Length: 266
Image 1 (cartoon, rainbow, N blue to C red):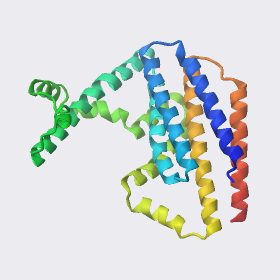
Image 2 (cartoon, helix red, strand yellow; image 1 turned 30 degrees about the horizontal axis):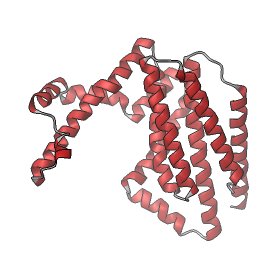
Image 3 (tube, rainbow, N blue to C red; image 1 turned 135 degrees about the horizontal axis):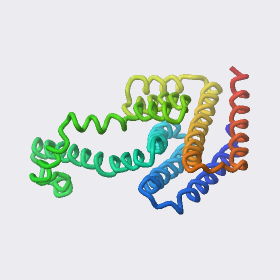
Image 4 (cartoon, helix red, strand yellow; image 1 turned 90 degrees about the vertical axis):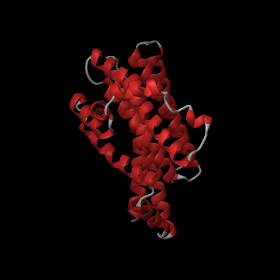
């Protein structure tokens, strides 16, 4: 508990959702859909990684993987907000404006590193922009302008826009899991404390916490993935299949049942 049946159910539904997403986007070739295809592939591959980590009892590491899954899911919803022109503008920002800003940042950071340690590295040197390119991008993207472009793409800002435009206030709760992942990534005192607390519990209590942790990971993944599909179905004005909804409901009932069994013991 969680059982093999629970994991099998999760994998089956994730694969069904993947097929629906691929089918939905396969015949579309506009800029928005192409970026969404990339984000969807990223999410599906990360879920595969998360499943492998869970199967090897690496739940804290799986929590870290949950963060980019959530970020990419939020990006899909954020990109979906607004008119067609507004969506295209955001796609352009993603592939072009943000790419140039990041290229400029990487170049300056690498150049500073090479200067400080007096290291000659062809691989790192290739990251450094030539002088005319750096001058052009520096003038195009001064700090004040960079911030105006980057700020709306921050995680918390995106979910605010989504809540306002799509009427999905419940996604504001995504900040909780994002925060936990951040603690683990930074290996701060909160992360060390949570991990240490679990190791100090008695065997039965620790096993219960591990099982609840696994349920949360899978439930969060499924919620995000089905949310991606619902967002696109609503955007393209297509009805979702009842069969998938039924399977998701069955999974949620199974997860709730397992949680209730565990909580009765405490």
